[in-house]
Length: 100
Image 1 (cartoon, rainbow, N blue to C red):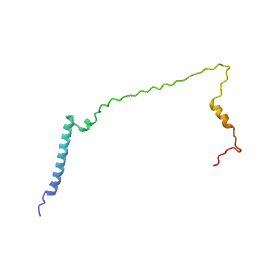
Image 2 (image 1 turned 135 degrees about the horizontal axis):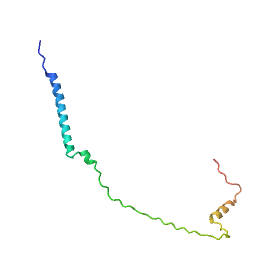
Image 3 (image 1 turned 90 degrees about the vertical axis):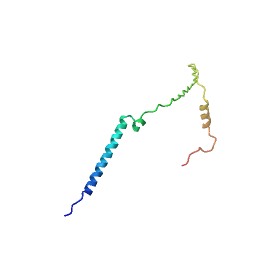
Image 4 (image 1 turned 30 degrees about the vertical axis):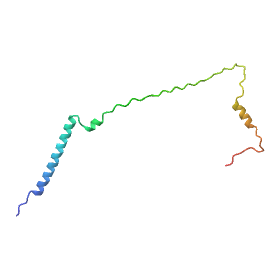
């Protein structure tokens, strides 16, 4: 009988062991970096101070005139009521209607 070599079984175990060693080495390096306070993700999270904003204050002044009439005085007709009365006087032959 021929003796089997340990080649394929040993090669797989070496690959798994080296991958685990690289993983642990990277994990330790990142842990040391975080402990030193040089983590780039935490550094970017610090808020930057906002620039000062100028606030524009605008005042609106309204002038209202209140006129009190005596109780026995009648109110004069306004220009709007005169225009409506004048518009009611139709001089055409037939009233205007809308067709759809």
